[in-house]
Image 1 (spheres, rainbow, N blue to C red):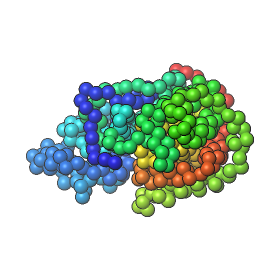
Image 2 (cartoon, rainbow, N blue to C red):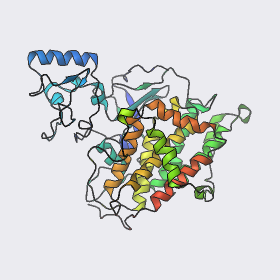
Image 3 (cartoon, rainbow, N blue to C red):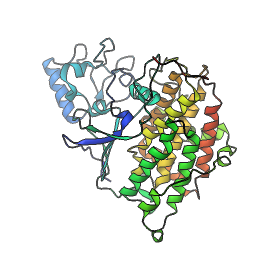
Image 4 (cartoon, rainbow, N blue to C red):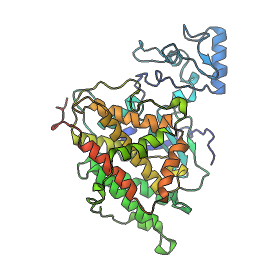
Length: 417
């Protein structure tokens, strides 16, 4: 599969979720303070060397901005161009020289782009605090209240912006996603499956019509039905489009799975794949700029926030091409759900607040999208394709659900603004 940088055509459209379409950088600077090594593209490196020679760099950065091909850091491990005292432009390089002088990773973050035969797709990493608040609240969040959009998971389109849409996983010439190992699903069937997961399984959670654990468990059962397809059954697209009755998951969702098993199977197994130098000592501790928002949240608030988050991880998923089938993508959602549950229970502060939700979503993407190499996460997801059915994954869902339900949620939502 080709993975070279590829930009969408100028004037084109990118598919995204309705709830993510309005994203714009909030200049909180969390990414600037994360201490990540930020590689400098060759053309940007030339531009910055020229600016350094002519004195055009921001004041105080000459001789400090370059560190072995990456942006330099201060003694506090912040990017040297970060200026937190400036209200509307936290990056002095962008303010001085424009967005074209920024490395690709700075320009595009937190956008996650995929291009394939269906077109261009954009999701977001909710490690970004601004994106996390959008997903957690379902709308522009204010500390005194919020109004969630029940159509958050609908498909929308945004215009290409060449300043920020600069790189993608390029699957344009790749085989379509797999149904199961060795069998292609096809672009059309995969698109149907992805859309139905969003609209028929996750979206009802936003309307309070279905518990999230039941929605996720049911989606896993439905995916098992699809994985059993054979060409003699007729067109796969017809099977994917058939009505699906959510099964009685009461027995499956009460399987005895311990918290320790959940933690070792998901969190510990994934952290073990992180390069040793970047392994967090006590995940989710160590998150840059944790939220202090003490707005109380109900269990329903949490369910809906997690449904939006899982939709954000499903849409435009790279695992569709890096995994070995539909269950690989479904397993990626289970890992995200379990990590949020484990992060929520890690805090000793009570009761549960909007800050807890926001930080837990950010912690999950911190591990899945930033600490881990993507192929490592995909390998964890692919391993579940070997199971005869989805019951081991449903057991993880049940364990995560019990962790979340046992937390001290507010009985009533905060008063709206």
